[in-house]
Each structure stands twice: as structure tokens, then as C-alpha cells.
Image (cartoon, rainbow, N blue to C red; front, side, top):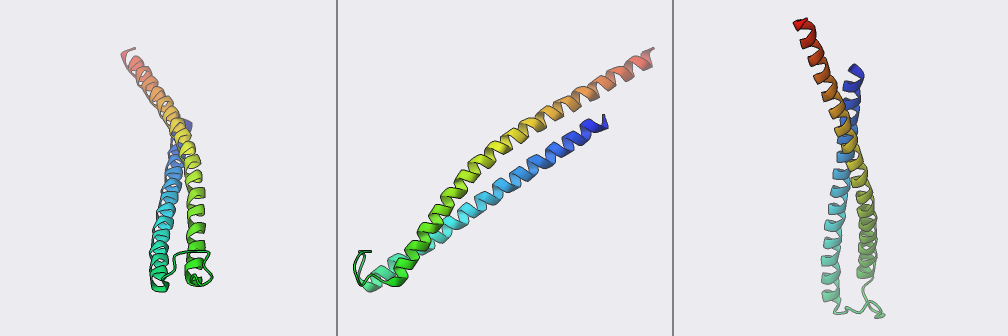
Length: 123
């Protein structure tokens, strides 16, 4: 029965690890969103300062162009992380289901031992 306890501990560890990975992805997505928001404000400020909002204008500020590129890269990375998060969430759900099965098996084993012990005491 020790092996069942070990299995449950292993499954619990795996679930905790998957949750940690999911939390890490959430934090990275939020950080990228914050950074993109800051870049948006910097772009708007630079466009106001220059008085040019047309990206194709010959005098459009170089800083604003670079900030737009960086913001777009962050948004692309954020999208990729969101896809990874969906996949990680699916893996977490599978790990939680495996943990639940292992816990049910352990509970069944414990109940079986208790019944056996009561029968031995009665006999």
C-alpha cells in the first residue's frame, strides 16, 4: 500500500508543478500586456510631440516606429503564450484526473484494510 501513497504523492507533485507552470504563463502574459500598454502610451506621446500619426509619412518619428515594432512583437509573443497556456491547462486537467484516480484507489485500499482489520478483531 506504500506504493499507492507514493503514487498519490507523485501525482500531487505533478499537479502542483503544472499549476506553477500555468501561473508562470499567466504572469508572463500579464507582464507582456503591461509592457505593450506602456509602449502604446509612449507611441501616442511621440506622435503628439511630432504632430504626425501616419506611419507611412516620411517624417514619422523613428522612436515611434521602433516602439510599434516592439509592441507588435510583444503582442505576438503574448498570443503564443496564450496558446501555450491553453495546452498547459489541458495537461493540468489530465494530471488532476490522474491524481483523483490515484486518491480514489488509495482510499479504497485504506477502507479495505480497515474492514480486514475489523474482521480479524471480531474473529
